[in-house]
Image (cartoon, rainbow over all chains, first blue to last red; front, side, top):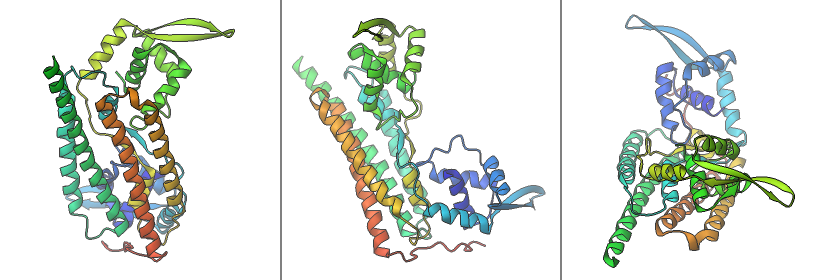
Length: 178
Length: 185
């Protein structure tokens, strides 16, 4: 239901066509992987259940399907928000953190760490910019969550820099003692 | 090489082990690499087929068990993996609690799950801390940094969830910050 809930939430805000929705879902990709999500079969399933309705719209002589929330869909979404969270476990797959935990010695190439630091910085800046434009119409609880996510990107960046500094120090100490 | 394979090789480089033992050892990494659906026996078979590990059967207390050992090729492959570039360095996270919070439109909803989430976060934090404390003396400085960060992440999550709970309680079940459903029509 998680992805369906994201779709319903977007459609409650405003009607949209599939391509648009696919883009909007990316907002949630930091807490729910969306890489293999195809929004069209999900929309069809939601339409069959009566949670969304669609109409065809002609723009620039192209026919597009526009999806809208139904009363049923709104009720389903509200009900979902009241239901318990089935699985409270966060599943993380963090290749950089894993690599650090598996490191055996410091006499190696750490190009991957430099790349990871670079990426973490880009990610942090991107998140801050992405969310900067969304503040005015966001409920405070969501605002909190967004700030927390930006903070977590910040922490990751700082952490990776600390790791790089520790590696350099250790290497220097070893050269000094050799 | 898959991340799970790297974890298995790393454990076997330290010492030979049988499958059940490895399955337990893999839990060490569960905070950064989710192992929920991992069957270590399938991973071990694949590694043996590639010649990266070898196995022999051992008889202990009249039970036959298979012991796995690192092969020279496995050692080389693991070393190569450690310096290889990481294709996508971003963490992939599935966080049902955060998703629920991000989709909340109205504080008048039932937030019973938030109490469960806080209890769960506390449990996980304590589990991670005891896992790392048990190993602390054997950890290198860099690995210790990472272990501390994993626990710090869990502490921050706990604090965050408590702040959210305070916000909900403060609102006292009133509809605060509701998104008008017809705003953009």
